[in-house]
Image (cartoon, rainbow, N blue to C red; front, side, top):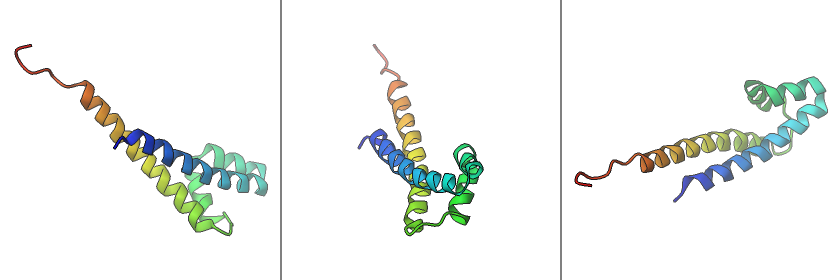
Length: 93
């Protein structure tokens, strides 16, 4: 199964979850919204400590897990593409 489409799907899910976090942060204050937008570690801190939503568990879990999955799928996909292009032809050719 190709890994790059899975990476794109995971990235889109993480993006939707991040949009929920970002909208909530900007409603709280502009400074908090800018910090969540520009500082990745603060976005994670904000998600666990200050984010209040009816479905907080699903949104935070989707954000964290899909971000990690997208990174893993992109890394494995890039590694498999590199392995395919770097094959040495058999001797005699």
